[in-house]
Amino acid sequence: MRKIILASASPRRRELLAAAGVSFKVCPGNGEEHITGTDPEEAVKELSSQKAFSAVFPEAENGTVILGADTVVVFEGKILGKPKDEEDAVQTLKMLQGNTHQVYTGVTILENICGKWQKTSFTEKTDVTFYPVSEKEIRDYVKTKEPMDKAGSYGIQGLFGIYVKSISGEYSNVVGLPVGRLFYEAKKSGIELRWQE
Ligand SMILES: Cc1cn([C@H]2C[C@H](O)[C@@H](COP(=O)(O)OP(=O)(O)OP(=O)(O)O)O2)c(=O)[nH]c1=O
Image 1 (cartoon, protein in one colour):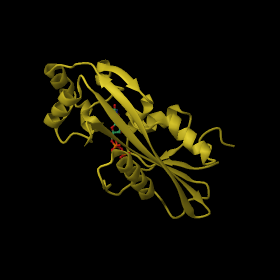
Image 2 (cartoon, rainbow, N blue to C red):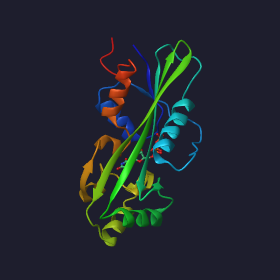
Image 3 (cartoon, protein in one colour):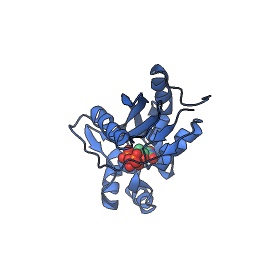
């Protein structure tokens, strides 16, 4: 049976992968990630690759797969990661409310083939539109601390979900791991992530 490793500390990615029926081990990478450039599509792909490679270990068996992912929110061309503090989260949400923004998740799949790591990387985009949200509603939300570990300062799967007017694209991509695209790309590379012998 193929060993699958999720190189992520994100509990959301763990839940999404488990819900998709994948058996895996979690091994968050230990390196610091560095964004190069300002193109979000390339940036998240690069960061996902850095995360995946930081979980590489020398004694990996043939066929071992390592998955890395990185998510950012983009509004009017500006990349928004996790908030610095609560006020930063408030300002970010004041900007996003009543508007449409993009969520980009980059994913890297590494497969060990006879000691060499073969890499597949891609970026998935989802558009999210929020209803208008008042400053009081935003401040009440930020007080819950839910936004603090999330790109764009909100969780679509949590308390901010009630302000979502529409989304275009994969929902799981917003939560941090586009499972449909992941399985599609893995299959194209000949990697079966579940129902393994
Ligand atoms: C927009 C949005 C983001 N997020 C989360 C997904 C990611 O966990 C997080 C973005 O941070 P990331 O840096 O992509 O990931 P992470 O630090 O949580 O985990 P790791 O680097 O170890 O893989 O924001 C949500 O949970 N819901 C949302 O609606």
